[in-house]
Structure formats: C-alpha cells, structure tokens
Image (cartoon, rainbow, N blue to C red; front, top):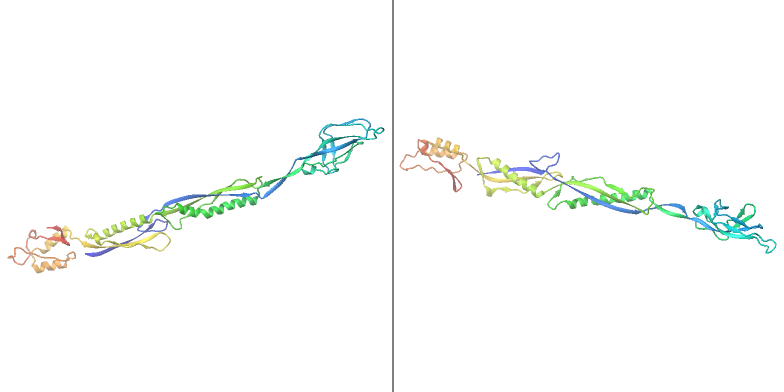
Length: 348
C-alpha cells in the first residue's frame, strides 16, 4: 500500500479565469420603481371678470332724451364703458321745478380685469355737448386670477427625487431577490440607467407635478453547495485516475480536505484529496512470476519475490515435502495465490 493524492482548482466560470472545474453562474435580474410628487412653485396671473356699476346721467334739455344700450362712456383711465340698456331721460323743467331731467343706467367696462374698476365719482364726463354723467358708486368686479404654474425647477426637482430614490433602493431590492441557497458573484452587479417619466412639462398649469420611474439591476449568482459538491466528486475521480488500473483505492482511507480560497475576488477554491492505494498484481504479471520461478531453488525463488515491487510479503510452499527444496521445472505445476489483505483477490 502507498499514499496517493490529487488536488484541483475550481470556481465560478468568469471571463479571464481558468480552473480545473468551472461552474457557470446563473443570471438574475430585478426591477425597482419609485414615485414622487412636488407642489408647483410657479404662478401666472390672468385678467378675469368685467367691472360693472351704475352711472347717473343728467339731461339739461327741455325735451326727453333716450340713451340707447351700448352707448360708449369714455373713462379718464382710458377704458371705454358701455351702457347695458336703453335709458329714458325726462326733460328738464327750468320754469316749474327748476330741475334737470336725469336717469340711472348700468354700465360695464369694455375690458376684463381689474383695470376696469373705478372708485365712486371717477367716471365723469359729458355725452355729446349737453349730457353729463357720473358714477355715484364704485364700478367693480374686474379681477386678476392667479394660476399655479409648473416651472423648470419643479420638473428637475421631482425627477431628481425619483432618481435618488431608485439609486438608493435598487441594489438592496436586487439582493433580496437572491435565493437563500445562492450567493452573488462579486463584481457582477450591473445597475442600468433610471427611466423616469414626469407628468407635466415646464410652463404647464397645475397645482403639482409628479414623476414615476424604474431601474433595472442584473447580476450573476451561484450555489456554493453545488459548486463544492461537484468539485468533491471530480477530486475523487482524479484520485482514481491517478491510481490507475494497477491500484485499488481503499475507500475507508479517502480523505477530502476542506477547500481553501484562491486569491482574488472571484469565488475560486483549491481542494486536496488523499487516500491509500493498494497495488494490484495483474494476470500478465502472475504469468511472468510463474515463468521466473520455474526450476529455481527456494532461495532463488524467494529472492525474486523479495525484489518484486508489488509484493509486500510472501510464503513459498513446496509439496510434497519429500521433494527436493526446489520449484518445479514445469511452469504448469506452480500455483500463485495473490491475496489483498485477508481476502484472496485471485488464484492460479
């Protein structure tokens, strides 16, 4: 018997690395998503509402006058107002009551917005050459409405918020996808570019702007238990091949050492296996031994057996015991019994 050993390197198949045994990694991917909303910070203002009120028109003529609807009433603010309906002005009575004829009529601004508003008494003037008008109360109702607007900063901010969230969760969520029995191949993670869509563009009206995005992550994983099991089986085969056909491995002596890490980040190991092997005397070798022993004296025969590389111990029996202490001259009269340990492996 003699000790034999074998060793091999093994690892995950990675470009640029070479091992006795390689296992292809498994590709794995995940997709993460994130959303964000941001209030609009821009604004715009738009005129709305038409200023309206009442004017008092005085008729100094001694005849009745009708002012038709739509009559232009110029304002000192540059805005033209219009009478909302026909108004009949009675004649003046310079001799009896000594009063002018007068009447009230609604007016409205010819523009929308707050520029049409006037304080009481601010709309005064003369119609033609004789009629006089004034507004006893305010002309109001024009206003400036505010509209929230999404600006460029809002769009960039909500996009950036989603991108930051994706960058923060992408790797962790990918790692959660790895099965418990698997491990990540170092350096194999690839994080894609975020794909973000924003709900509005800069300049759009809106109270808020939102964004949603996704990001893809891929990597490679492997099963350490499977890798070590494959390597152990291959180590046994290498040991058997090393022993060859002329050895018998003693199964109880096979020792598989714990794997040791190889330098580098790639999952790679070296494993050693050892065993005791017993040499086997083949049929042709038995024939050769018989041929060598024929006709020799006991001492000569014992010397040949002593020098044989595959014989650990031997015993020569010559029968019947009254013969000369020599081996038979005829080879067929010589029997060779080969034993391995306590059991007979073969007999001739």
